[in-house]
Image (cartoon, rainbow, N blue to C red; front, side, top):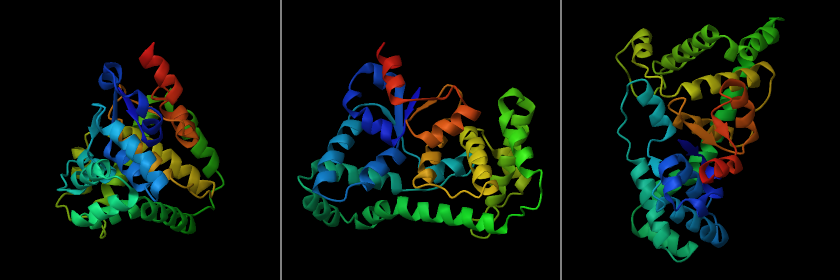
Length: 278
């Protein structure tokens, strides 16, 4: 199955009507959210209304879990989240609206302003917090170990050649994320130990965990700042539950990471078209 992240969904919007795409492709509420959040004026309204309409009515499957929900579900926790349903409702309001001003008026009439404001701030606020978190981690990181860089390269450069190393790295990342559920600022309190949380993990976001692990290491150790949209580009990897799923993307950052860790699970938009339509 081919997962269409936002830009590939936009690029393939005109091709989605056909059984070869219905049977082989899927996307996510994250992609639809990014399409909607880019509506800022009459021009973007017209363009994105057309793309959203084609995507929604194409019959390809949409995963309606937001990344935050995917993370909690992977560790066995269910979140009661009405946001995806309301995002979809805003999309339907978009389709029925004639202009950008009409769209905004219809949102207000439908009492959806809160969710529209969520859409408009979701990407920007998340991006800011993401960058701030890396800056804080760099400020607190101990750079005194002279073998740090060589050890990092040994781990990640040979990850695919050593299954035991890959498993060890994944288990360390599972433990790291499990610990976040016990933090004081966690979304809700859990009555489990870290070991119990680790045992509940279902391996549905292994791709994401390993890729964010490599990404984080490079940003912290080499003191690099995250680029714009890295947060959401990485979150798209949560929609790859196993080795049978391939993300379709032209993003250079994702290609760099995936070619190192999961080289067989990412292809470009043009390569996807050739495979599906051959």
